[in-house]
Length: 194
Image 1 (spheres, one colour):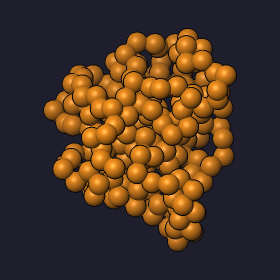
Image 2 (cartoon, rainbow, N blue to C red; image 1 turned 90 degrees about the vertical axis):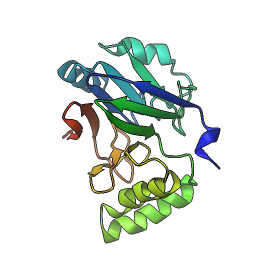
Image 3 (cartoon, rainbow, N blue to C red; image 1 turned 135 degrees about the vertical axis):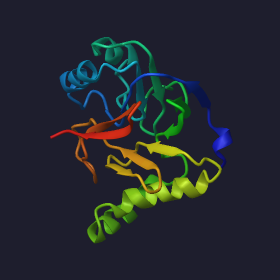
């Protein structure tokens, strides 16, 4: 499978970007999401997959609950019940380039979860690190930052320029690293929630 088979979008964007991953609406705290959006006041919001995960939930219902509804890009995840805008987003911001994708595109989740559960016992950061390294190898022509959802881990591996973007979900998973990512003129920052 090649990354070329996925719907891709390239944009250049100045200003702050907030990346929210794995919200799993309606299994989230919409007030918490709104507090983040108001506090950060981004010029672009990227929803990094697994946002709407129940069939009866309409995308418009979720969007209408957000206090900031402008400039939203929806990247499709493996559990999404809506199509989303794209599968892969290449974003140029402040002369830096980022590749954003949910991260489910290449691996069988059933085996991935088993391996991650085992490796997490050895070292908590090992599964998200290997997830990042796998994408760095698969996307070897892309030399800048990669930002991944899917794992629910929230960690920035600066030395290999790869971020696992955490989760906003209230559902228990292997990783429950609640938080989000911000891209600004200062670079990339992860923000952990309690």
